[in-house]
Image (cartoon, rainbow, N blue to C red; front, side, top):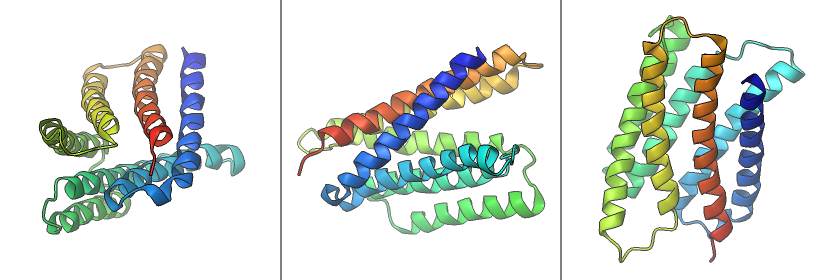
Length: 207
């Protein structure tokens, strides 16, 4: 199971790199709201790059300190994406920024909450709600062209299933190594689906 996990993991690295290169090439034809998709995927690429570089280049095997940064950054960027798409008052951008910054300060300075997965689940639920509302609006308003509809659907699917996986993971006591890699592989497969939707959308983009 470990080998399968590594295969999916490095597949995701390849997909992320492809998305970054293709997205950068087509960045100029994106409108202001669409550029937020590239910012989100660029942040994920940055985190994954650090996770890869720090152990192999700098021999820093424990990269868990990046997890709060990943949660906060992902929460702010993805919620900001849907806040703009839904044309929610801009004050909510400030609220999400404060929540993200507050979590990092609380975690890095006071180590609270001890289990960051709690915050991860809450942030995912908020993202699910926003992406779900955006999807419903986009499906109802068929007259409006949305070039990232597939990505929005995959974002909703990814975060919905991820919450379920997190809950299941914490309900199972004494996970064996094999079970642990099965859960990680399932989450990585979900990531692959999401990344493929980005790649397909960027490939199809035209002026």
